[in-house]
Image (cartoon, rainbow, N blue to C red; front, side, top):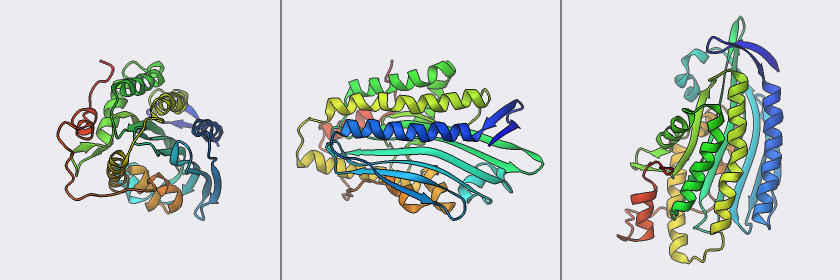
Length: 313
């Protein structure tokens, strides 16, 4: 649907169908890239419809050579009543019909030396008769290592900088800091990972500019992740590393179920539970009052790598 809207006092053409076209192509391409990267397993398609409106296609890959579990989902859903998590965040949306679409992915590699990673790009629009639509883009990508490597951190953040720099010199620092602040477990007092990019409610520069930023972030994700996975996938590991990976995955689960806006929006809006919770790892553990050995690589993860910092300095 193409509409002319005034968002942030500028006249713009908002083309939801163009966004969907990009997202579905991105979904297809990325799944092909990840299958090739894994080298063994293939994605299984699960198309679904939502009774309240819309639907999507969830693809999952399990027990591969690289990925223990990978999920990449496209959805385009709509409704007439916003869930509390959204209406509280943006009170001006009350009484509007809404539409949300996006591609979201989470990759849980088997080898503990390969980080877990998450990416999401999305578009939201809300309409009300007699008023201009409200719209924005959101998204980003972040990395959650279990064992830290400075080379990987620098590459990850350099690729993030490359993704956003054409859209504003100020943007990288803003979106990096937003990511550091967002992916933070307040109840633990620690970061979930080494960050990356995060943005939401983004309409800066008008529709074409904001859409361009979303596309660039999506296209740079594979370039950011694949070299890290290739470098680390064949490092030998034993029970110690696997046990630590499962423990740290617990932090990932805690964040998604307690803090993540996308998870809360999906569950509260009557979304498809299986697709929403595809982000959770297949195996995880919680150890009471776990304390890593002083000076160990496990201790270094939180003391050095999970401290927000400028990796490009």
